[in-house]
Amino acid sequence: MINYNKKPDACHKFQSRFGWEVDKYALTWKLDKNNSVYLGWIDIFDDEIRKSFLSTLQYYAVNFSAAHACNLCQRAKWFFEFTGGELNTNLLVAYRSSLDSSKEHYLGGLRGFFVTWYKQGHPGVSEEFLKTLQGWVLKGNERGRAVLQMDSLKGPLTDIEMQGVLEGLITCYSKKNLELEDFVLILILLHTGRRSIQIVGLKIKDLRLVDRKGVAGYSINFPRAKQRNVPWRSTFNTCAIDEDLWIVLQLQMAETVKKLQSLVAFSLSDALIQELPLFPDFADISLRTTESDLLNLLKSDYVHAPVKICRAALIRFSDTQHMFSERTGESLNLTTRRFRSTLGTNVARQGYGIAIVAEVLDHSDLQSAGYYIKSLSDIVERIDKAVAQQLAPFAQAFQGVLVKSEQEAIRGADPSSRISNGQVNVGTCGSFGFCGALAPVACYTCTHFQPWVDGPHEQVLNELLASSDRVWGVTQDFKVASANDRLILAVTEVVRRCEVAKKEIAHG
Image (cartoon, rainbow, N blue to C red; front, side, top):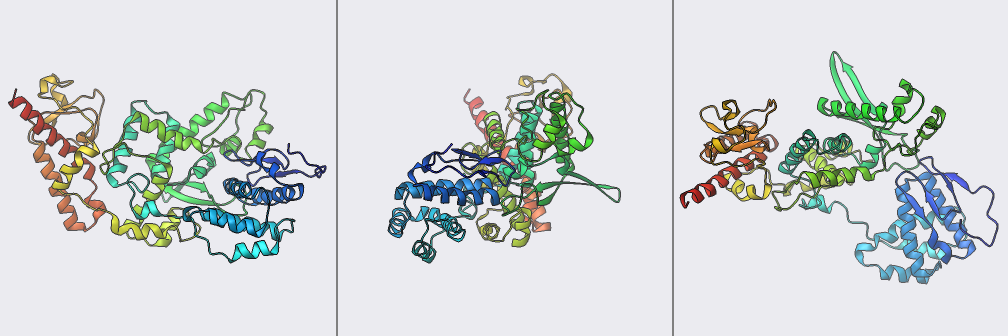
């Protein structure tokens, strides 16, 4: 607890916007599952300023997101450590002078905090102090740079990179190298571009199945984020999904129910199941937990998984399935934000306006969505044979193993393992399971494919490039014409490796 010279008032408990009970005079305010405010530093204040600061911060903790309150507290800490806990105009001017242009937005964020402090009548902020602060034009936080510059490390992923992620994700899960929860989390990020806080805020009842004249429609009712002055899960935005994602979501739902039922002594009713989080944290649930206890916990995000599970899932995937970027030749940097910016960029590329981009990304205003419209001129749309030869070694789209002949291949003695282009054989499939993919084009990005050195891979490449040109001629649609770009890179890499192998064989 924070020590005061004065005895604290009796009503020192309040609820954060996410429904967590907070002691105003505690050293730590736990505002939601993911955010805590640390107040050990406020002993630099005198009693009057300390009380005013806590009351103002409480207003933000109750009415705004926990992340915003934590952010304001951190910026206030930097300001008051500079001023020694004092509030006067001279120190305010000195603090601004100490900030370079890239950090001036720190003070811009605090401006609203001090305005609230003053308007609520708490002592400490003078009229002169406030007029000085409000009279400044402060540089805002730079936004949209990674999108505008198509940054290869932080910006939107290319179509080739996205195809690689999806193929790698399916491969990783099918080989049981990735847990179901990680698989589902990444699929949601990839397909919907939603923020991590929205994904972990999902409940089972948010998965929607609607029958439209005999045709099933699937959607997710995402709780909105960054909405001011509204309680947790009080506003929603619906996102349509395909059947493939729906099926894996049902698997995750069943796993959640199974996990909880194994922890509690009572049977889970259908109504209670609907209230369960899709991605749970049942660490504090045990046989002693009653149904009433659980229902109470479900009113907040207490049993929902923390936001960090999304980032952790991406790290585990990247560590297991090494993905590469054709732009850098380095490991692909995967973050939740990149999936989001990729979705916005792709929507803009399809010709939709700023309002649609904002709707798809669940933005409350149009400002951020505008960056995706402005970035279109920087996007490279199609690749030809020359470009493919340059990019192929970097993309590492070919995942199989080159073999000198059929005799060296896994299952080489099995005639049914041969892969043909419709005229001659090009390689061997090393998988012992059933595969319904279209051979041979789908094989070049498969880990089981074993192309033969003397196979007609150049012919396959030329056919793919010609097909891309035909599609472009008919549709004039870059997105459609570029659908096989990653496959083209994979075949190009096989052609290149075959050339190297043939030279090595010739020089024996």
